[in-house]
Length: 297
Image 1 (spheres, rainbow, N blue to C red):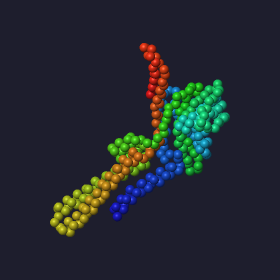
Image 2: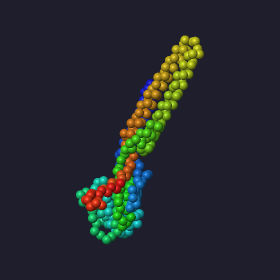
Image 3: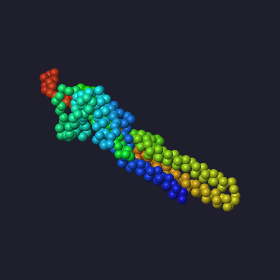
Image 4: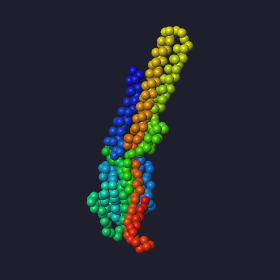
């Protein structure tokens, strides 16, 4: 009976966690809110800035358009050409911003790069990432991460990689405190269950060991055979319960380590350093032909 109750205590939170995760997948683009919402990437140069815009609408496309309109409006551009890029998908989109409205929209073309031949002020935007949530009424709430240049300036955008992996960052934290790695990756519910489960099982180990030791001492203080048998039975029961708690906390700790390194976490934006190199002919001081190489990291 005690084993059954213990298994129920472990399985019920896990089933609740799985149900909550599945529900989040149906109502949002990611099961965990991305980390970049609260922590923006740091641009590698000063030709652009990272910004976040949010908007809600009845459809996903309408919410996306509102996010873009908010970004352009906040940039201070009153009229000109907006060039939106997505280098991860190799797509380009050009729009005309006139008196606070997007008045023209061209289709995406994944094979050609848009060349805007115009004297109008140009605003370059790189759509880095997106996260959307859907409420019970069916409306979409979209949060988008953009890289935006200043109007009229040509930016050198970073190469940003979106990932849900954290590597050893979550592992060493969970090795020190069970659940810490999950908290670091944004899985707060899972981290709370692991931390609370380990704490409860540790308390169970202390309690059952104290009870076992107490009945063991009582055996040495009496010569009543009936009491000795009763105390020995209770001592053995608490010893069994203690061993179950030890095995359970060990299994939960191992699961905590495996989950910390293998399970995906909140999506984060990682800026990859770009490497540029060039080769050019040169002549040595002795007049011999050479090839000069230039590397930029």
